[in-house]
Image (cartoon, rainbow, N blue to C red):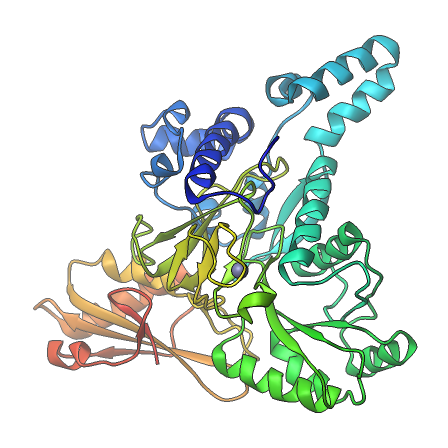
Length: 461
Ligand SMILES: [Zn+2]
């Protein structure tokens, strides 16, 4: 019998992921992604040499700016796979192919439907931090998303008897679509009244929820408007929270519920992903986000270079087993303290897990100010200049959810003022915006900067 999705050992999980990576590159990415065909040829690599998770490490990770260097979201359409009827026979699994062939003999339109289910993108969600771009799903992908949702329910310790109330805006986002499909996949009733606190409160009176899903940014504000939610036993923070956000939401949730047991757990979809990952109930949120063995390969790169690294760094996602869009070595902009496939100390399942995730840490300015600046693009600009001896990027918060980014540069001899002006121009052209400040500094000064290190030179106050 096949191993259940949560019953892998670390070694069976590793060999499953090797097979899935090889199949995804061979059957989906290489034949149907013009973007990746071009990239493989630029890297002077043959797609057929990518046969395992370890082989992936040798490919530089890719993100929004590599797909669309000008920042034009239209360029991001290149992520969608260009499959069609001719391609279907190449990658369809045996039984699906035989069924389709039989249908073709009998009824051509039924054959076309079977092919379309597996190849044609029929629905889109919009994702991304620096720019919004579409992620395509085929009908078969949506089935996969629903199955992943049923698993998410189990990870969160929920059952079909739970009643979900979602305060996530009903829109074409991974967060909303994945929650909707999770409730459907689990067979649990769910209400999606929108994100206005009064609409959420009215829905809660109508159908008392046992699970309340709220965007992490808005959770405290909404919970403070709710009282007497005596049926509530789980709050889902949508978007990995910081420790401070989790604590504040937990206090607000207890005020809203009164007495009783309550779990506050995170669910999170990195940029580019089509499913939500969850924290297991047994861990109480202490063991990281649980991904899916047959859908997600998690790796880490140095945010400055995009090269493979171990330990902490930028989370990179390779999505396997889905057809609509090709997310291979995708740079999420999230920072993690590590990824692992070792058994979880809480639920004891060997699943890919992302630990210590900081959501969109590498894309700053997502607060009320509106403008967004990509710290990875700043790093590329600074790293490319001969007249800069050393540099640091320091991201910090300022009031009302906004953030500031201070760049400190050390001149490599020469005209320091000209260097600062040149660096500013390079940053503007690569990152699409200027940081809050660019400050000429001395080597001692930047080496004594303190903060949480996302990489050697990118830090957060
Ligand atoms: Zn667990």
